[in-house]
Image (cartoon, rainbow over all chains, first blue to last red; front, top):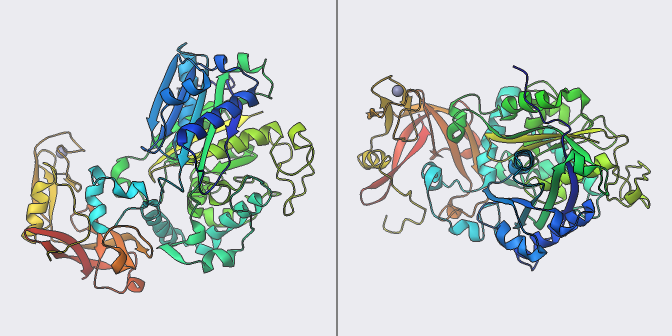
Length: 406
Length: 135
Ligand SMILES: [Zn+2]
């Protein structure tokens, strides 16, 4: 049976974000309002054009019914979703579905988080006070609390099975730091070396400090509408070719026991998303592979078929994923260097790449005039980027994906 | 023993027999009476055949390290004094995997495939936590 597809029928027409900081001094409500407002303005829409809203969070943010009124928006559809890193792409798909059914016309998707100053993903701050429930039964008594601990098992086993090294995956941080050095928004703009990464202190072996993403305060927003409406808007429409949302491994709660732990959900998601889009990995110009940790980027690129299974270490250390390489990954610097947004910023960056208007320091960046000089502090626009792919990852056993074109 | 500082699990209807057995220094896994499937992480149903007729059966408590990590930095209550400590998924001889700590082994000596056996940490009156050490 052919894959059902809504290819090219929906577009992302607006993107917006607040400053990425360590200490916003603001509520998630105020930040969400800013990000949604900026995305609406970016799209050239009026507040009254937006009648749908989706957001995601883990008990650390503000719901849509408190954000929409601050912008004078009356909603025909909204949904507050629980979730983390595999939500962005999934919610783009849900927005398309809500519009397709006629429930609403245009959806704003936001994520707002004080990920540094309030609820730290590493398990500190307010998050540490949460009670011990559900899966925690098997984890908390043994001192398992942080995302790093959850994810590092997979990397350890991958090293054992395929000979992957710390030095190889360190290249992900090296590449993303290069990209961040050309991104005025990035929290961490300094370029680093492989030695810097493997020489940084252990957090959870095999993860060093520089293998781990940042913790950041920010809000981000994407606006989804139909291709018909998108054609009349200010910005160049960016078309959704394919989307997969929260595709999971078998027995998602105990996935290591039911299929190799070094296999990630992309193994199952790839047929859905490539099937809808009608393309192959070779056709993708820019990737946005989730970098909660250096190796998460590698594992997904491997599983979606950008290289053979087990050869991810060689792929990410080959120069392919750097600006100037064949298929750059996370050209904004991603979660390792730009800031941690639970996936949103990686889709925002790819929308800007496809428009040709990434916000680097090129004087004509907003009009799409770029030098393509990838030295420190200069350009980060990929030349002739026509197709991008985002690979989102939350729990080690769950993933989402999004293919877009200009 | 009275001052155990680490978090204890919230005991549920499905997990109570498991923790009661731990107090007797027995490690239990669930086995389905209908299809024979062994499962770990206590559930109210056999995930293979949906039978609710699952029973507890003793494990020999022997297995191998499937994968592991060494935590050098944590905010987990009570664990900061023990850094670095080893978390591992252990593949039991019965064919299921359990999460635990590897104790009384130098973290630098822990490796995938290391043979291990269960040992019980008596944390308070009537409550013990299964841990693993080199076999
Ligand atoms: Zn059964």
